[in-house]
Length: 364
Image 1 (cartoon, rainbow, N blue to C red):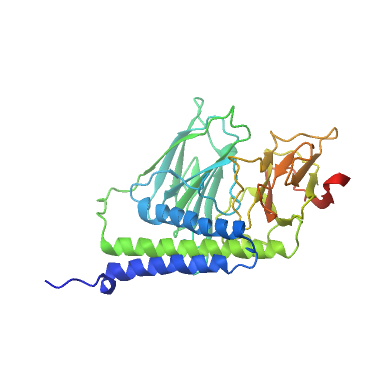
Image 2 (tube, rainbow, N blue to C red):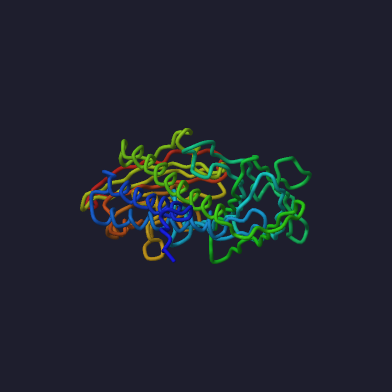
């Protein structure tokens, strides 16, 4: 019996196309002018492997809108789009033609937000955005701390999370202010539409899922590379990202962000200063040029409203440098000489833009 040439089969072509996407995105990363040293290039290639894992988890391993479940998305070893070290993000597959329900207990985590999203490739080939969002303070909660949420395209009474007809994903963001005292909300997601038989994996389904994973990977690479290119035009400055650039990414509409690109020479430090308004949460963090938070398991690369030290007038001054300057609110560059940075606000009375200046450590 003659051997089959798998490259000529449907599955062979689909797999080859997925592998070609990996090669193309690796080449894209290495071609970025910002990656001008070994550390940035190594992190860039690792970034491709991380987002590939996330893409495969989303569209191959866990993509089941008929019997969905919540699973952990960005985490300590998969980072994307200025991920927040304080946030636990959970994902689930949805489909706008079904209706779903979340049952849960609020518990004590500082911020809870749920959003439905459409646009599997971050807007590269079509629409991308948030179909609906529901934040913890908007929930009708029972006396025992439990709640129930309907998720559907059509409005429902009580707690309702809207979907766009093209919705493919639910993102639940739970953000700590103080991990030592807060407990994440307990959540259970089910589909409540009329029952239908679960599908056995088919070749066309797998091929389509691989294609979606490839498009998602490329979309992430291109969208966030454009962000960094934009930040680099004005180094050592925090500013709001234009709406047309932010719209494609699956961000939380309740958050205000200021982002920037930082670069320091030996002996230099960055001072980030602001008078915080009344707010539920704020944080500042360092990222690499790929918009991954720096290694927060080993270094102090982030501060928030709870962990920061304040001046007598309530202001904050954050100092970014390679070595400890002996000042409060020191953020470590963790071996980097350049990268990106993010200041985020949640439910603030106002959104002041933090000032940023470079100084020599000897000068203070």
